[in-house]
Image 1 (cartoon, rainbow, N blue to C red):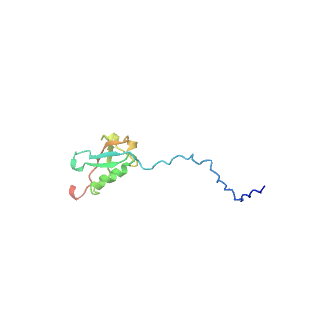
Image 2: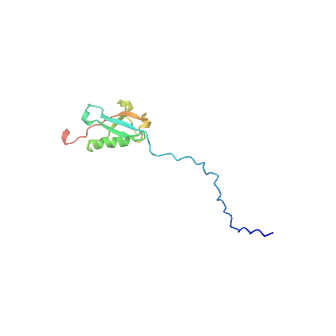
Image 3: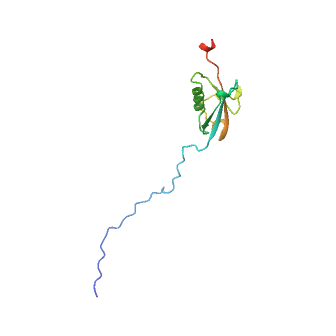
Length: 126
């Protein structure tokens, strides 16, 4: 009987070691807030529809962003705004503009942001 041919000795492929954490990592959370809010921004008093506008934002939008948009709409001529969300009352004025709409009770949908300001003394007021 004949001899069997020797199998060539090819180096065995060693499977890389699998990490104990492989497949166990949580999915990263998206930093984009998918919730939508339509904020209607209104001057509290006197009621003036010419100064009313809508702002598309999210619940994570800071009040400071809304204040900046209001000042832009006034051409930068106002400052020291009093801002309230959904109801204008002196006791409910938002003190820190670093708060978000969510911290003011808005989680989605529509809201009304009321603002008021004291006019600065200037050439028009003298």
